[in-house]
Length: 441
Image (tube, helix red, strand yellow):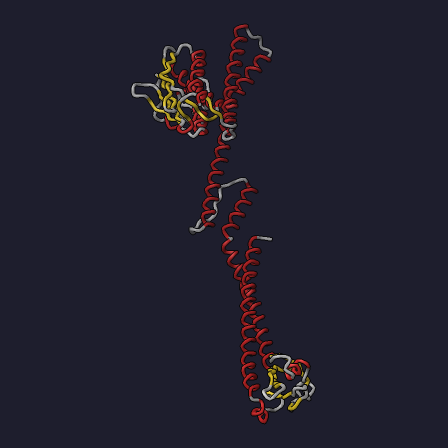
């Protein structure tokens, strides 16, 4: 059953219960009032029956009967049935009462009498009866009217409930239709109309925000796949060319063969680095569980690796404050190495790189050419390579990975030029760090 149908049934059910209670209350109140009026008049007549006997005519007004203590009718001009209950009052064994009874008239029709039975002052009992068929007729009409009113109210409530639920659920219906279209087409570019300030309007805005994020994510994924395909094509083509040369019929000299093999090795290393970077970026938020590790020790290990990789560069640690990071050690190790490798490539022979760690911020400063102003806003984008960097090995993923890792730890990374030349890259981990050593915690 749909939500709209359930809301309609709930509205109709609530109104049905309320209308039923109102109608039942109205009916019984009216019944009580009608009977009370008759009972008051019957009680008044029962107090002085003899004075009223000459005025009675058969069942057109009140009929009176007097019953002796032995149960014998003394006066009963209209043949009111005298039963054991009336005789019990006449003999003094019971008190007075009101009741309804059904009587067959001389014309052969059944009528309903309302009777008041009281002990008579001179002994016996007095019975005053009135034909109340008109009350039953009025109550029947009232009951019919109330039933029709109740049915009309329920139908009106069901219609109003359907209209209200249709109006209220219209935003939900639009969300559902949009979700179904997106599921069919795979394109989250459409948006649902926004309006109002209620909860459903907020839901629509949240849905549009989600669609925007999804669209941006898909677009990023498409760009990533396109860029990765483009970047992989170049080394693959070079590898294939060199393999074809080695397998060809042309005889190569030992020197030429060595050059081709060197190209193959270099291209395979670049391919390996490129694939590693792509995997690092592709796994994005699919993180393993966090762990605490000593950030300053990780930086020292990376510096030892950098000295081996770039022996012509002077690596100068400028104070590595003991720092504990709650995060992903493998990813952080790759990010730190990317920063050092980038600084080493741009320093050149005889250059120097200063590395410092304080207050949860890692700073890597080289003395190379620095960032061109037009390149600096783009250096953390995937696959971006400046004009000067295109002559060097790499795929433009190093600093992009640094940014991904920083954001995974709730931190930031910035790049700027030093005032006296060279580039400065700062990796700040904000709340993911604390001073001290992991062993002491």
